[in-house]
Length: 404
Ligand SMILES: [Zn+2]
Image (cartoon, rainbow, N blue to C red; front, side, top):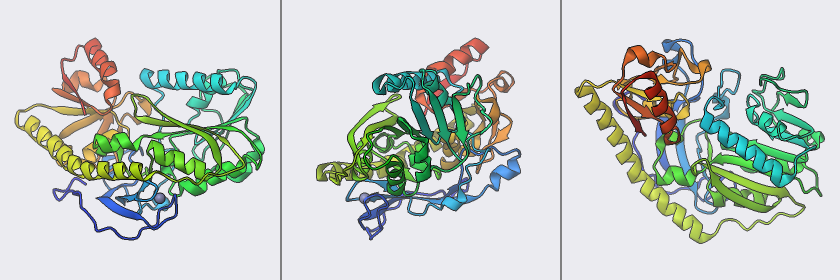
């Protein structure tokens, strides 16, 4: 998306798109971003590979019945969750603190000591290890990108990993607790997925279940376009997530926000009855208003950052982006003038000396800043601003730090 004719918001006339969650034909398109890299986290060894990385169409539609937001043009075949997919945030102390607090909270609430815990979409197993440290009997991670040879350091034999997509058959693991973090937003048919989870737990069970996804209400309110990317095909708000779980046979559904209100957490239990209450009209109307406002804010945001980068360039100021995750990659790819960013900094060694899909920006470690002397460091996630300012102070780098 670096060409000058960058994608713009377009209003499309309502038409009957089928909602994959409530299965009613009441969804309409509200955002068309055009072609974007199909994986904003993939690590590429050369700039050429990065620039020619496959692209897919990113469109967002909104269901006027249940409030679910999704990409109707999403093609799962274009997304490859193999080893080159690096989703670990475990290198940040701020994120580790959150994960540790969450694991302890879940262990206390569900009395997990001596129990069997299953995590769907466990990635490298960092969170499962946090849960394991709470004294559980067994922790099993199910993830097509999991490392069956225990990648996590200091992993005990209580932890094991199954390199498969989760299916009903994994119910044979007989979990006393099941969790799934930052996975459901990657699933194009979340109703079928949640149904599979429910069936895996058996008809008459009452197993505590915990899900965590990004909160889309915040993305809409802040017009955080960098939180919209190809791999995320399903977008939830507290109400639409809760409605989905009630619809698929879970009870005691409770949602809350955490991690500076960026993450949406859902607690529930499997139940033998489904309550297909759907979402309230008032809620769907409010969401509809947020979506209208989002359109305007999105345009303003993109234009604002484009001017900022161009003005910095004219003033001879060098700009770098801190954060080589999806947000950083979406930023340099979406903002016209993204090529004016010198490079992307990331503290995760696995990302360093690699290249961002689409724009081809080089990703380097903080050490590079000693020689590159940037004037401005744009922080992709404001929650890390203080951590990054301190790192720069410790290194004696006087750059201006600005959160995006
Ligand atoms: Zn719907």
